[in-house]
Length: 104
Image 1 (cartoon, rainbow, N blue to C red):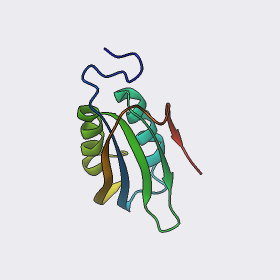
Image 2 (spheres, rainbow, N blue to C red):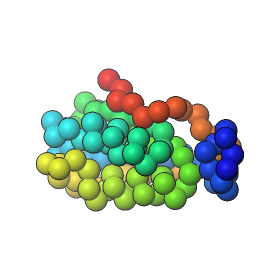
Image 3 (tube, one colour):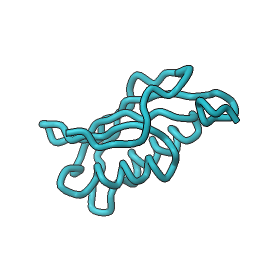
Image 4 (cartoon, helix red, strand yellow):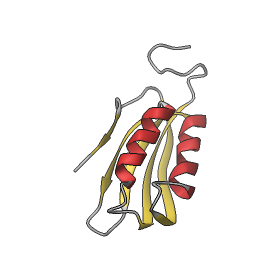
């Protein structure tokens, strides 16, 4: 296991996301931050002024994929996800962020 990347195979990726639906005022950011930390991915999440939640996730590809599924299907207990959009997915040589935080 590489100490620098935390990944055995060095298969790190980064993806931007935006979640549409009833996702503000339902602790979506807090649950996203918690899920990211539990999975061991890094990133950030924030509310937008158009009622969506957006952010970025980085980590080993299989964990980023697990986070994408969670973001598009589960989210926080009282949210209603209409759709999830993932963009700019790319392989990265090393993590560009540390931890998982809520931005304002």
